[in-house]
Length: 138
Image (cartoon, rainbow, N blue to C red; front, side, top):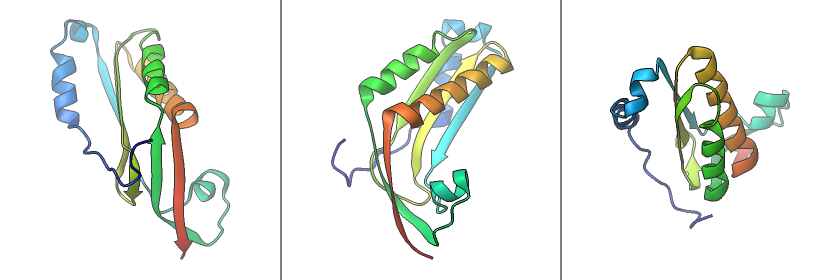
């Protein structure tokens, strides 16, 4: 992980879409999906498990393994009907509302694109990133 105070600027979703729509495979694509994950105030344990410890998230220390991210994107591109998979991840000390990640999937039909987006975001969150929530009492 880089300097923990580093925070990167998120790329433009519009520029990503313009770029992929200019590629040769674009004529075979019928759908693009974008995931934009952001730091939320509600702790992960409360959202996912219903555990309320009386705290609120004030920020997050976020990092990732770029080799694992590249492998996850490559694996996604092997899925049926998927022609584009791209991921950008932030790093460092993030605040509530900051962007954590941006993922773009392009493919032939809705079920393939939805499956690929769910697969890649899940893989990134479960195998490629480290997240440490910073909390304070509400």
